[in-house]
Length: 284
Length: 318
Image (tube, rainbow over all chains, first blue to last red; front, side, top):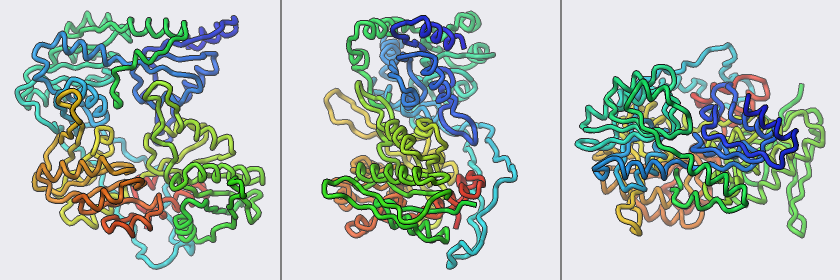
């Protein structure tokens, strides 16, 4: 709300151009229709455009398609060069590591890291998640077997699809005797990271790192991380996490203010931003 | 009470006819032709005042011409006072250009969305969008139907060893789709990703997961030039898979695709009929089609009657 009001204030005070620098764009996980839910990202994009922003700079959007929700130019900077540098400088023996995707949804990001570091890949699948059951709200009418139907086939319906039986948590790929680096774009609810780390440890990984661009780390995440088998948690400073660092000393921070400052400078002087995107893989 | 008026564009008249048959109505009359300077001309042949209009056009064949024809048809119905105009677009055009992944790249999917809204569409029905975020590009309601229930039905009925198969994703981006199908069939999954061991070396494909002595089922949303799935097939057979099937929602098959499929060792390539497949099936006998006209017909019927469409996300109507 504060951001919208500030932006509108700048617009009405006759600013020449208002650029919103939003390192972590909120509601980016709600960017698709889920069962009569709202696409909050789209609503937020429209509100930001209406409030007078002319340009948005953000970092590691959860879904790159969110750029299309805005009618104004959006620059989606990447933290991956910083994370790759961190891996190469601070993890000794990184050539014996495996990049792990903690669920199939983050397989793309993990692959782009694995490609650039020339390491192997593993994917974890099958967490115990409470399935969202279909609520019968009385509006489910099966198709009427009426005169509209072209006769010829039997009238019985295909039986109800079996519910997704989530198999027990499993690692696809080999991690025995290596360092496992779990890569994702945000760490918020650490439950899945902790479970992933446990199973990686079981399969033989001797050290486990968790790296993410945005470290939300809400509620009792620091405590859970402290107690888990994860050796180190690396996040960038897109979100302030001083409090969490005090509670858990496994958390390391990467400073990405350099790239934001450079982006602002280049936009101000009208220079090309392609330099900031030169080493980005297509899937990142 | 408005009636359903179903119009067909020139991209996929066969599918529109099948949908009309399922709904038990006749296709409404429309004449689409080109003037001698190649401008599209559309003449709606019956009254649409106050009616619920559905226009079926897929983004295949001459994509740009078909898109223009659809926009003109939507506009014609809108200014002829139709109560509501719904565009039924089984394959959404320019869906792959949905993000700015290089400097100065256009987001063409957003542009198409804007054009459809400006032309006057009130509702969009589409199938297996390349990215579900494209729903958010529109300000009007979008129904993204899934071919997954039809695919699962086909697998259970036509692949005898499906219980011991492995669902494989030909690239890392499709991992979510593949795990969803693998969970419903209660089988394992694997994925293939490209890895460059040395700089300047051609990327080799690495299989993550185990397919030895099992039937491998490659699943993806679209196949254009089929380079990826043919390489994936070789990789899977080299890793010990007994047979390889490929199941794709949208079979675009442009360029060398048909010859690649004929020369590969895939058992079968299964696509839905979101794109007309008659010519392709003549040139290649490995291609099978899954008919999804009943899913679209059901969606149209439910939208018209104001009923819930969520039933279609897990069931295949007969």
